[in-house]
Amino acid sequence: MTSFAPSTDELLGRICVVTGSAGGIGREVALILAKAGGRIALIDRDQSGARETSGLIAAHGGHALVVDCDTADPDSVETAHAIVAQQLGEVDILVNNAAIRRPGTLASLSLADWNAVIAVNLTGYFLCSQVFSRGMRERGRGALVHISSVCAEMALPMAGAYSVAKAGVTMLSRQLALEWGPVGIRSNAVHPGMISTPRTDAIYERPGVRDQRSAILPSRRIGTPVDIAQTVLFLASPRSDYINGAELVVDGGMTRNLMSFVPST
Ligand SMILES: NC(=O)c1ccc[n+]([C@@H]2O[C@H](COP(=O)([O-])OP(=O)(O)OC[C@H]3O[C@@H](n4cnc5c(N)ncnc54)[C@H](O)[C@@H]3O)[C@@H](O)[C@H]2O)c1
Image (cartoon, rainbow, N blue to C red):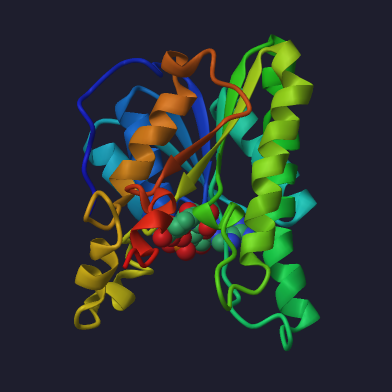
């Protein structure tokens, strides 16, 4: 699963915080930012997974700091920021990625499940943006990249609060662009479609699922964490210097394909 983009130095020495980097998409994002020269803070509740990510970065000659943090807890985020600032320096790039799922129909979803998803998937993105951007606002430069989802635009059946929270993330990103653009901070969102990760692999191992899902995608393949990581690297780097308040949809064309399913005879 893990792989690297061609080596570049475009983030040389930049301090990058990646939340939810103990595995899946966050791990691949951390790896690609490290490969581009960034010094990475791996923020996660899963310390053993984060240490694995750190080991992968070190094996490629990169540098990463593992920080235990619950992104939904304001005190935990403050403590994590203090550790990162002290050990690496003030943050240049934040990738908000940590998220959870509590599936269910809205008719029976518990308030606890609703609140848990909103707390991590939306409030956590706000808290991390506010706290980790302090140095960016002082220095007048920085980049925020928020991992949202195609579910921000399209309701997902049985998603509980997930799609609602993702729609909130996309608007949070726009609002941050509006408020902090004038002080030199860019805020953009990535909307992944169907991405194969260790967490979703069980679905793709069911007979026929990968082929059936691939068939409805114009690109005819399920996405990988590398597809998302490449996009994050672009949005974090000076290559996207004039992109602010935007959403990049990375879904192999899935959300542009409705007309293929309209009967024509
Ligand atoms: N995989 C997909 O198909 C897909 C599609 C669209 C969007 N996304 C989004 O991409 C992001 C990553 O998805 P993934 O599939 O890699 O997920 P994942 O479940 O594999 O990884 C999420 C990580 O976040 C961490 N985390 C969860 N709650 C946390 C908290 N409160 N504090 C700190 N860390 C916490 C977990 O420990 C885990 O390491 C998420 O925002 C997800 O919504 C994924």
